[in-house]
Image 1 (cartoon, rainbow, N blue to C red):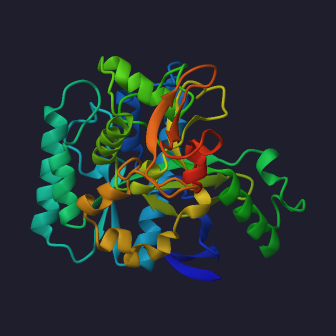
Image 2 (image 1 turned 180 degrees about the vertical axis):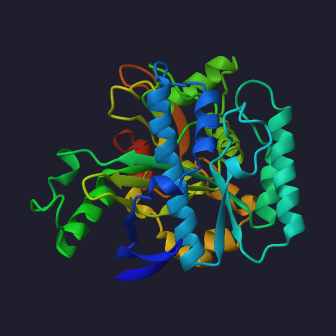
Amino acid sequence: MRIKKKMIGRYMEIKRFDDFIICPIPAESELDQVEIEKIVAHTRNTWQHDRQNGEMRENTIQGKRAEIVIENILNDNSTSRFLAYDKIRRDNFNKHAPFDGIIYRKDISANILQSAIDKVNNDVINSGGNTGIITVDTRKYMERNSIYTIEIKSSLLRYPRDYRCINGDVEVTRSNDNYIRLCEYVKNYYDYFVYPHFCRDNQNITSFYDYTRYVRDINNINPLNKQAFVYSLMKQEFDNACDIYTRVFFDLRRNEILVPGYIVKTRFFEEPRIRKMPSPKSKNAIYYMYHMQYGKSILKIDHDEDLLSWNRFTAYPQLFCANIPNCPYCGKRLRMVEAKGRNNKFLYVCDWCPKEYKWTEITDIYRTNR
């Protein structure tokens, strides 16, 4: 399907394949070069410790092009609007941004929108350190008024790895069949991701269990009830995360961007999976990941019940360890325990089943994202 998309003084075709939107990479003329230079000048490396200005500029331009694409898609195809954080910030670019932008209804009260913007800026200015932090109360205020924070990740499709699924017409021409093949590959190979709240960069963390161990260690706690501790951790992660996560892919060989869709933050913390990226540059960075195949098309955002009926207190019961699962053999309640040894992990144990049915892997209970 092709959708006509209005640009400044001209029209541009957008291609749609299932939930994917594919559109041209925004031109250099659409970028705010002054803003980009401000961001580069104030960027402090986190886990990418050796980035120089040239690389930071390239990364910033890529991120800005991703924002433009999201903004334009929503402007032309929905009643939702995107506003970049860099357009509303008042910290003189001194702190890391707490999110990439906000999404809201175009008919929102100007007073409510401005009130949310003021709360965000007050939080960031008053937060310590180099990272702008917004409070949970501000997040709650925004969510109650249908203003959602969004994080936009952008990645480059890698040649030849990501193109092996198609039949050779990589650059000059590409059939609809090959577009479909590429979209299916991206959907099945890649993940949405978000940094954990308490740590972004740690060589020794390779799993969700490792991360929970890290949180316990830095807080010097050894909880007797492992399930209650993990649920409490999930609530903290949920409370401090953005509301919406999306990821776009730059197809430089066709000068196009692929937009697979998005997920709401609850998904990360229902079946938490923590991994590292398979890249030498990000080998120590850790992320919650969620399979891209379970995302939603950005064109469905106006009718997304997860957003229309947003209420964090109804989301809490969906989080991992909010409820104690039942034994798949006898039906009675399981108990979470910590198995230590060569492969440290959490397990479920049934206190009523015989030995051969006593232990249950978490992946046997939660199968979507583990």
